Image (cartoon, rainbow over all chains, first blue to last red; front, top):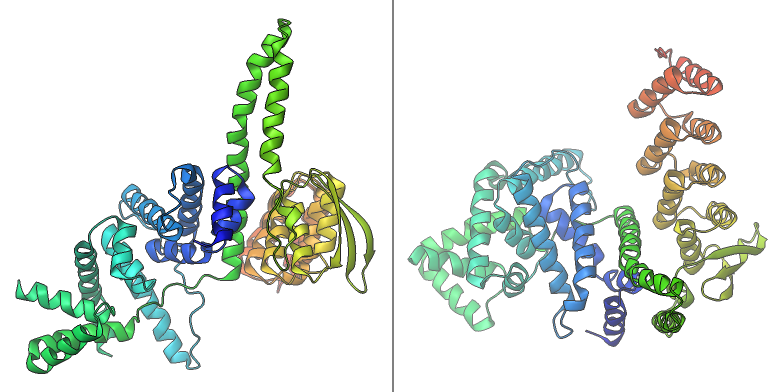
Length: 181
Length: 306
């Protein structure tokens, strides 16, 4: 944690919103991306993003300065997403599949295939359990180390590997036709 | 068990968790064990389709909108947390009524504590393109001192705990940030009008468009909402802007704002716009607006207003 971040954190702990906004502005894009990877729906991801940051703002007085702020935020986000998934009991909305910021293909047929694949990927992700999806989002989509994902998810590295493997197996089964091409 | 171990090793390899010596040993094992090689090939096929580290990319617009929502939620949090001051003040007021002399002294102490807390806002590090005083608390007023529309040069007087003057160009991020923030604060109408008018000259940024959409949807002053419609006009083809304009046409209580929104939406023939126009033609409270919506629908290749 650098000096500016530490200063902002101390001010944010005193309940100063601007300091908190500036502090999280270093990570909020990644955090929103994680929320989208965890739930796949823009509106829900925005809710999780906001709930995560409000929960973090409230809990800041309990945050230990020697901990990693980024990991702490990620952990709250994963917990919020898992809570949401339990609440919804897999009743996910079908709208808002995210297709932003992908590399555009110059080939329209390839573009269509890519779009279809994204839809299938989203469908496959919905079939995963909360923990499997979290492990996949953190390690595969976000590129976190397995050890980091274990800290975020609050479990052992072995468990993360287990969830990750299960997620991959389920997805391979569901996306088989695309994988063979 | 052997399968579990094999699986774990493949994953560890694919996610780059092995050190160089382990990688070398794994590759040697691959050459000797066809089943391991086959498993790896399967997993690599998956990996080629979905490479690691290519998660969702968040657009600037989505991020700006999410930040605005967060800002509003944090403001609410701030109001809730400051309510403890009111809770403390209640017995003090009671004690003052009873003529207890210690009351005012404690009030002074509380004011001192509050000022002490406020003084923490000071000493914020200066960063390129940012206005440090903007982060020293809530803006309470904003006035236009000078403005050269051709050059975009502005001079603004900003009141926080104390006044400050800022001079710069509308194209500068710090000026845009100041105006966008002011537009969302609980300022006098005149200040918000100034902010929305100036932002209208510079609507290219996502953050500014979000601030203008916020003003169109939430500002209590119809003049501000009217200015926001005008400022958003060049961006009407943007989905979020059009949704805000449609909402204004559908729900704004002020007929002037609804007329302005209708004017901007005149050239759109998408399904959502046609639906809102139909509804407007049938049920808008204002006769002129109903007539305009009907005319527009007739012009749109003879769409029936009913």
